[in-house]
Image (tube, rainbow, N blue to C red; front, top):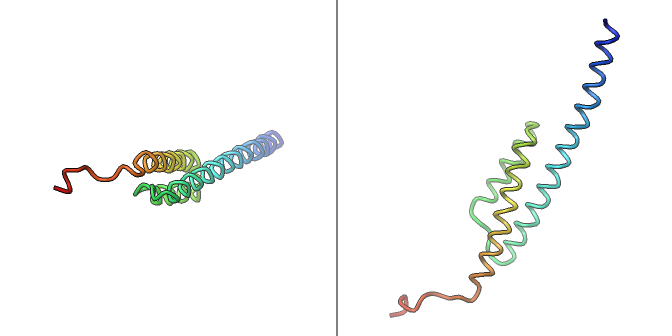
Length: 102
């Protein structure tokens, strides 16, 4: 009975640990993509207001071991970076409406 318990525990640690490492790696990839998207938005003055807060919350969740939440938050931050870039590029050179100058 003890041998079975030790074997089962070893298997859980082995496979559970690799799942943990996989999620951590997924988070690192998502974080890197979010940071690159943020830099891209910053390069055209298109960074959205909350992207920094979202990244901080993602990193806090990762430190606590909640990689699912951390990955979701990093993906939200990546979306905001890409959307901010697209918005800034779409509005580039548009100027203000004429009624503001009358």
